[in-house]
Amino acid sequence: MARDGAVYACQSCGAVQTRWTGQCPACGAWNTLVEELTSRPPGALKATKATRKAPLAFEGLDAETPAPPRIATGVDEWDRVCGGGVVPGSAILVGGDPGVGKSTLLLQVAASAARRGARCAYISGEEAIEQVRSRAQRMGLADAPVKLAAETALRSILDGLKSEPFDLVVIDSIQTMWSDAHEAGPGSVTQVRAAAGELVRLAKKRGLAVILVGHVTKEGAIAGPRVVEHMVDAVFAFEGERGYPFRILRGAKNRFGATDEIGVFEMGDAGLSEVKNPSALFLDTSGERAAGAAVFAGIEGSRPVLVEIQALVAPSAYGTPRRAVVGWDSGRLAMILAVLEARCGLSFGDRDVYLNVAGGLRISEPAADLAAAAALASSAFDVALPQDCVVFGEISLSGDVRPVSRMDARLKEAAKLGFRRALGPTGLDKPGLPVTGASRLADAIQRIHDGALDPT
Image (tube, rainbow, N blue to C red; front, side, top):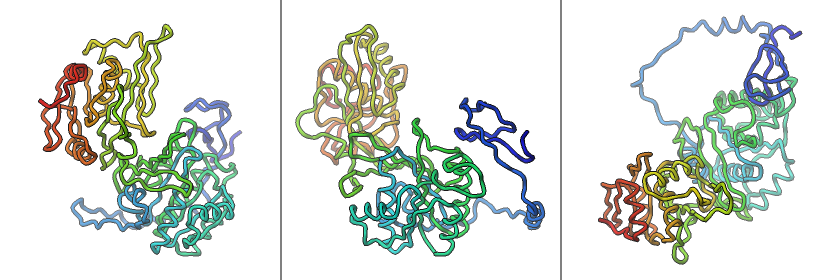
């Protein structure tokens, strides 16, 4: 029988149940419900009544609100994703696959901020101090005035942060923190939620910027209860494909900046180095462009990025043709293939189709539709697109080519990198970079087939 004030929390999804069951009704996982006590401690009711004496004060929307101060860490790609720097009193959650370089990135951020005068601390629950110091020496950061600690007890960490004034603290990782106020083990939903809540509360109270490292599940989501993502002010995902040196820091949530910004890094022997011009790295400018390749002029956050989309259409050796895609949405590829078949007369029913975004970058915006279709048509016709041509545009199910956002910025970036023409929606022309406009996908495919991509 459950004790008074007890509930059961799922260690997989965080759902709360009033009674124990073998299977969680929310996510279907077995044997994941753990008992939690929710009884109010003695004297809590009196304290609650005491805090409700002051009436609630309201303010108008037209009141003057100063911009929040920021701590510029000196790592420009990190500061870009943060919105100009870390805001004091904020909490940031950084997630990523194992081995992608989360600890390396945050050690560099803390060291760079400390060299600029910020009081920084790095608390590791996964490595000993000697391991962190050894990595710092290998990265050339040994002279940075960063305070190190290795601890997993939440109470000791909170007492240590209260005893010394810090501006920025890195907690690596939140899944290793353990609070003696709860019986659950480290990494459980109860412990993660409690540790995150205490650290966020400390950050708000003392004006301390806290960066939490979070593990991810095999599906790519940050492990632990989803409520942790709601507690913090920003959630960043650190992404990277195996076999590629590039790493992408992508903002998924940011209360003090844009949520679609990205920072680009390159992993090397001495840690991560910033990539100031990602387009130059994602493109292969050596030699002529082969059939099946199209350069897409995309937008990631506030910066334009040019990347090569590669396609291969080959006869299928089996009864069911294969569809494989890397760096793009497989459902979007299926839609483009259907439109090409229904509106342009191309047949892919007996062909294997492979699509790849070069450089390990993942594209999610619909503006890549026309570039993917152009790469597929180029491979199907065995006709290479011009070396100096970029492609962008959204494709509707009716076969129309629709305008996309910030087309001027896309063309400006392309012109800066030496491109002299573009294939895109109609009604757009840029001095020095003429655009071959196409209102229908069939018109664009016909131009690719005939090799007539000169502007009209």
